[in-house]
Length: 72
Image (cartoon, rainbow, N blue to C red; front, side, top):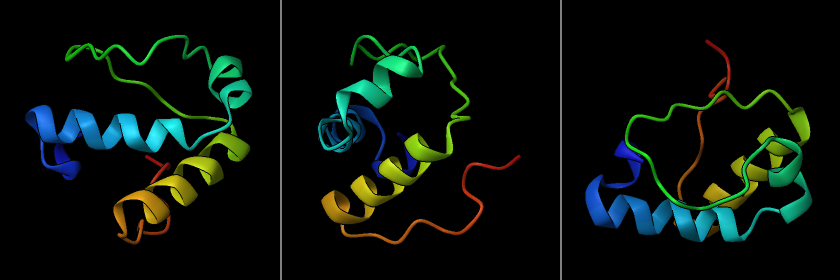
């Protein structure tokens, strides 16, 4: 969210991105709500969800996601 502008602008960007991801992928990852919790950090392990998120970010926000974004 910080990379999307932070604050309300960042939240709206994340919301727009998540709307582009197939709902079943979000449910399988345990994401049941688009409510934002500042204390929540989430690790995305599903390669399919990772690809869907990258595609959605690049399409919606018109930015390129660096390779390895989901690896620590």
